[in-house]
Length: 555
Image: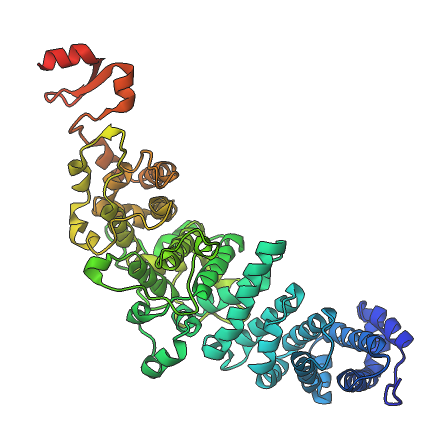
């Protein structure tokens, strides 16, 4: 070994074992901290400039970094001492060596480097600031492109810690340079999960913090877009507006982002929210009714999500808009596999991901409070003044969903002789708004997804029940309780939605009880059975009789 190396391979192994226990760590490692750092620095020089025993040198270097990584867990004092020794510069040089190929890519080395960075950043705000100042964006970009789950988990944790405690870090992460890091992390995570079922759960925490706690979805969508930099020249000075969603170039990373957020919405534990507190902001205590008027409207992440939904589900003939995907390509999974050459398939995939994310947020009994506070090392964004579900409702979720459902028209079955006239007249107050949405099922299961959001949003939420009832949506949802060959689960979700709309809502139950039969529908099944159903116009009751007898009477 070089004469600069002060600690032997055998001693490093002993120190590594000692670093795992707090008592021995304090007694054996702290007095040797300078020597351990100097050893690591000398070993890095040998790794970078070559050595006849390069494999052994690399192993010793990894051992030294492991000792320092474990030592950082001792707290702020140790981290500050390492910072003064120059640990961040040492790690930056190591990452540069990996990026330039000067160090052989032993998969353990980048993982240990990233883990040391994560522990160091967590040690103190001063350390986190130093890490961010010296490593963003170049070295973090290199780490984000190393396809190792342990490396990327630790890298994600480092970025999350810096976003929570370093001034300006959050803004940088949702900017173009930060978006390139997130894109690499998301792409690798998606590919790795598909191939090996490995998942970077810390990435979901990071994205959840950015979107749910800090309300930065719109800025992140813009930066992830391949046109983000060009688009930013126009809009960044004035600040992003919800209208900017319509001008985005959609890319695959947008879908990956929403899928990661949906996974976070499913995985984060619920926070118990007292019923009185939960309904306080949406209940008018003066007259006892529930209203959306008292929910504060914001231009945050949930409003952006609704704007995205409105744009992707629009009626292109009325609202306009051509295929708006980047050259890099927003493609659906089917298109990637050569099963679908529809140029809009990518946007349809993004629409599905948008509905799934809203569905999973609405499914949370804590209205999203757990998502807001899951990474709250610091307080959430000042703009985050109400719960996620409240923000969705204030942005027009109920009206949008019922209008989308009305735009689809009645469920048709080629084996039945149905009258669509009656069903199309349901929810008449939304006729004009429904024309703004597509009448086509843009993908298999589209109607089911709309109904799933309605069902989840209505569960134990009087404000949603009242809003759906007010626009005639209860009857419209009830009309979906039949088999749709394009959306096999539509009937099941419709039944669940009707149940949730009626629970505790006398208005919804009365709307169903007041329905009257207007016509009898003949079907292939009834014809095969030799029976026919007719409607008694006097009492509104259905009469079942043998087909030949009924038809003879009619003649």
